[in-house]
Image (cartoon, rainbow, N blue to C red; front, side, top):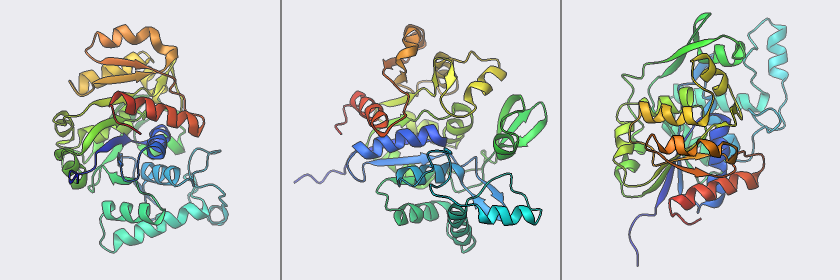
Amino acid sequence: MNDSPARKILALSGGVGGAKLALGLSSVLPPDALDVVVNTADDFTHLGLHISPDIDTLLYTLSGQNNQELGWGLAGESWQAMDALENLGGETWFRLGDRDLATHLWRSQALAGGLGLAQVTNELATRMGLSTAVHPMTEDSVRTAVHSDEGELPFQEYFVRRQCQPCVSGFEFKGIEAAKPNPAVMRLLRSEQVAGVVICPSNPFVSVDPILRIEGMYHALLAVDAPIIAVSPIVAGMAIKGPAAKMMAELGMPVTALAVAEHYAEQYPGLLNTFVIDQSDATLASDIRSIGIDVAITPTIMKTLQDKQQLARFTLGMMEFQA
């Protein structure tokens, strides 16, 4: 009889790209074998409600409820509440569908009742039928501020209201110095259960950086006796989803997978064992290896569930984790 704890994969995720690979991983791994720590620096209060965009994108994607046409929110939405609010002159720039609104109402009520964000998220995941453990990176308030040619903008003002139009010059994570990492994530990292860590193809600046900059997270990951593999969100000079490529250009960085690898190498030395790049970027492999990170090459564009599963299996294969 084997009494050793089951081995797990830990994924770091934010946004649509992260959720796509997390879905691939969850669909090929055994039940309960995947834990995902999610960026919460995109969270904000809107219409009096606590909105957690990256958590909800992940929950909706893993439960098969996501709106694939829009890329956010729930499938089969209606917009009667927003239409009525618009008639009243209310703020409707951040669109909350009628079904999506229920999630935010439930979360906000639970938080107001004294539950923490981790417990609330766990309850939502359970009610959506998920076996994957979904962890907010922290229960403390961390909020991304975008420094731009229009001044400092809260992230959702920049991302949704202004449609990423302002030119960015940097990012600030307000509250991150005082924020504590999610205890469940730290316990997992200190255990011997972690067979590998996957940094999903999420925006490195506003999705992954907040997670890695939470106190103790980077060093806890360094101490894990398991491979840490990141998947590039940049393919052939373009971001598959979101503003990462635009941000890189405005920050004076080459819009390449190499530049993403260099960002991780400079900001988090020794963190990555392997960087996964798309086959279209194969010519960058030697340059990435020259900065001390191994490279793996495979198709990384995830349009179908099969694409997600193939990338997940490829990544797990490098960890010698059988799925």
